[in-house]
Image 1 (cartoon, helix red, strand yellow):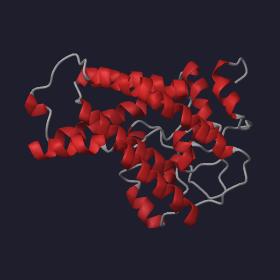
Image 2 (image 1 turned 180 degrees about the vertical axis):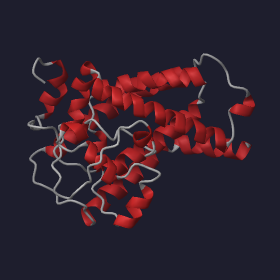
Image 3 (image 1 turned 30 degrees about the vertical axis):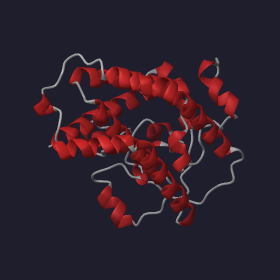
Length: 260
């Protein structure tokens, strides 16, 4: 039990390193073995890395302290027997993933939240960098919303950090343009969200945009009737219907503009 807890703590502390290594491997891999041809979209990477840079600056100032504060101000304290052990870690990851599914669904269905989340969907192609293309206020509010299950379920801080590590690796993977064999991806998609599932979520057809909300485990969409029947194809148009991507400053200001 002690060894597992030490391993969990170490894994949580290695979150930036793990995320960085996974990003680099996927970034290189999708350029060696691409699933879909990469279009020439001017300034696309500048937009994605620009939004990511804002999050990187704000994360240690606001987002990380917010998560730490919530995890250290729980509504109740778990008995020691419910804090340690691999089974409780896995259970917490599943519960947080379920919460993230419903939060993602809310970002699409609540109009004021959709104004911010659209910034992510303006991207007209998907690759690993798309995983970080979010408005800073969406990232901050998502961290705030996550405090609800953390407080209610008294989830240990180390479990939250491990979940966030698994979550960001999963998000990078299912946004990536990495080519996988059809058989392998089909088998993997029975358990976790793969690019073939999530690319449909970014299809420039609104019924598909409002589907396939899961992040880590792929079971939530079939369970809650939000899985699209559309199949990913290499020529699938990515983005939003009848909407073009915008310059970086416009992306930041879009949620506050009358015509976003």
